[in-house]
Amino acid sequence: MVHVLIATYGSRGDTMPLAGVGLRLQQAGHAVTITTNHELDSETTELGLDARGVPLDLGEPDGEPSLADAMKLIRPAGIRQLSRNVLEAVDDVPADVVLTTPFTEPAMHALAEARGIPIIGARLQPLSATREYPPSLLGAWSSGGTINRATGRFAEGTVDRMYAGVVADLRRDLGLPRRSARALRRDRSRAQWPILCGWSPAVLPRPADWRPGIEVVGSWWAPSPRNWSPAPDLEDFLADGPPPVLVGLGSLLVPAQERDRLAAIVDEALAAAGVRGLVQAGGAGLRVPDREGVLNIDTVPYEHVLPRVAAIVHSCGAGTTAAALRAGIPSAPLPSPGGDQPFWARRLHALGAGTLPIARTKVTVSALAKAIRAAVSDSRYRTAAGALSSAIATEDGAATVLRVVAGQ
Image (cartoon, rainbow, N blue to C red; front, side, top):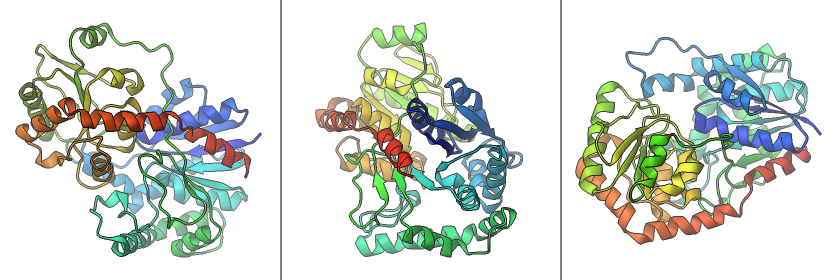
């Protein structure tokens, strides 16, 4: 048995699926330490894992918290601070193998090399160049195989140039020889370092042109809260009437003006579609006026609630997309521009499990009401989502992680 260091940072959707993997590793007899956003530290510790909350101070928000403030993390200064804080948090961890997510890769590649231990990539979005689709984080439409792959290579090069100084500083701090980020990427690819992709191959198959060592293993799931039961008002609402539509934008941060605009559109669209609604506050703080047929809620475990709703309106982050398909319910995609949300939104539509995506910044009452009606009333969406749910139920993404860890 080995000591596995799981290095992750970000939102609940970025972190908690890896906490689920950590529990599986621990149940198999391995020692596990996991880094988290400091706000998730206590929650992860309560699961029984050795959790290391990583503080990060990126300065005061520019006015109200927004996506622009969250984007400070991916600037070189943000990744430099995160990397050093993560390294400090795990300095005493006697790891035998590292499992790292993208935000923590710069620090963990340097740490693994300095200690001479193996490293495994863990990804919730496709980041490796391929002819089959464009880079998922660019939110771009497919432009054909040659351009897709070239765009992917360009994106990789851009990342290497963007964080070249960060990589150089980390290597210097750990006493490693100078080597460029581009050369290090080439070295890792030639060595076929393992990258495990935690989504269902039924949802997005492994591209044929990926190098050996990159595998699509199936989704990883956040641990289900122990002894959870719905609050009385939620249970009464779910039991008293037809299944509602859940509206939730996950950890998305928006300023007050945008939040109020979205809340008004959601409220009117639910009424126009003639459906009951559950409105989840999330990072956006979304809340509609109290009225019959609508209930405002906070964070709930999707595995308990989604099977009891008719459809979900969501921003199509990787975690919520997987949860909706696991539950076998249709989606009405409402992605933000950029990032992986447009990618997963289009994928849901291509699979027949989601309506035509509506950009969050361009959504109107009539467009959202139309999408909600279609998601609820067109049986083809539920049939497609149900078929994918059946496929996902046969998969065990964490089992592959256990196998790869055991082989290191």
